[in-house]
Length: 457
Ligand SMILES: Cc1cc2nc3c(=O)[nH]c(=O)nc-3n(C[C@H](O)[C@H](O)[C@H](O)COP(=O)(O)OP(=O)(O)OC[C@H]3O[C@@H](n4cnc5c(N)ncnc54)[C@H](O)[C@@H]3O)c2cc1C
Image 1 (spheres, rainbow, N blue to C red):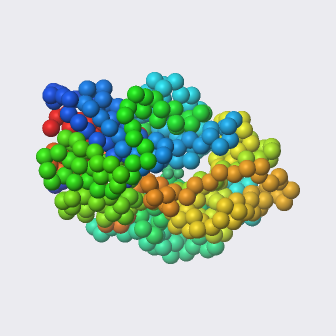
Image 2 (image 1 turned 90 degrees about the vertical axis):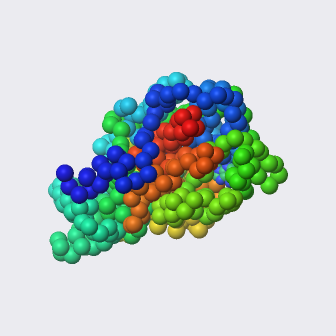
Image 3 (image 1 turned 180 degrees about the vertical axis):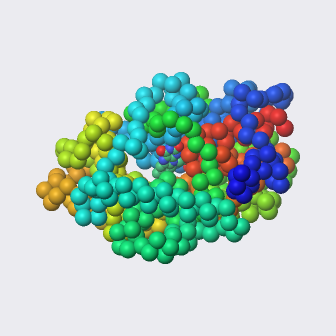
């Protein structure tokens, strides 16, 4: 067992950290005397999962949501009436044993399997990557992976960029290797974890667990899950929580226009919102929690959907990937031609590049995406008939896409963030889930964990 595996085991065993085992709803023991009143702040997946479970156990629950819609980072746009599209999460990552697979079944939501292996990679010159170069790319990926593993066993944490730089100077990287490495960094690291390689912890960036199996794409959008969980819950939208007062016996939650009072509160505010101090806690949150908020970070992933009159790209693969001259520029595309039989491409921008383009106009973003597509498929491809895009870092109710581990962070911080306070405040949301942070299933499981904490308190 290497040093990192040992650390992970110790953390999992709760040794040297404030322990809190990952408990599923099915493990619940004795119930409390109900009804107690619980306020859930946030109607994203974590909040809805928690509210649903509490209400099913006869608690009185009110969900307070700042936006005028529910779902949070699950958000299915119906702008194109014939093609519902997810602006936040789209997939169940790893369908085998994933609690969301069962939930999707209960909600009668159709899932379509997609695979990262169903891909076409393009070279910097816009042509399909040759077999020989693809082998070189795979070799480089393996070598770089080994360099990361070495860094994970080191005493001191470093950024993934530092590992890359060391690796580059060791292999004497020429322009081609540098471009390939940038591609690997962008597609395998930044697009997946949403943090930039400059900041992500080499030791802990990949500390989350994964479910096995292919990814499941919601044919009619993730909103089916949202609606299913939200049925007959009391949800008050456009209630922007400003202050949580937990000094007295009962907790008071102030939204500027209303005050809500309850025995306990589940806070599912995104890490970005907590970091920005958008909600005041009185008394302030304990130091362990504020340290965790400061120590973790929120990444960026933005989507740009382009709808065309016809498909002009390979229609038999799910992913189109580009080795680009500039780091992170339109590296990853999803084609919906095979999965949904529609002429729609989805381009991603992650991390620093994802943040940078949020300042651009819609026309600039679409223009830049089209320049990449013309580079790949020629000057005569049609203009998009419509587009839809996101700016998650500027969204005041998210302030980022999902959390990641920057240099200096480790899994202990997520346990700290999730630790209940004084039997009154409970914390859920993807960032609080040590095992599956950054994902929809992590958010869902964190909501169930917070309920378990309340019911067993
Ligand atoms: C572009 C993108 C792609 C993604 N892709 C995937 C994917 O394919 N698969 C996957 O598993 N995961 C994916 N994720 C991650 C996944 O969407 C999130 O981890 C998950 O939805 C988070 O749920 P949550 O309940 O923790 O937070 P949220 O959904 O953000 O819920 C928090 C709620 O709190 C509300 N709120 C904020 N401030 C206030 C306030 N002051 N007062 C009241 N309410 C407030 C928000 O409006 C929101 O509704 C993706 C995320 C993004 C952004």
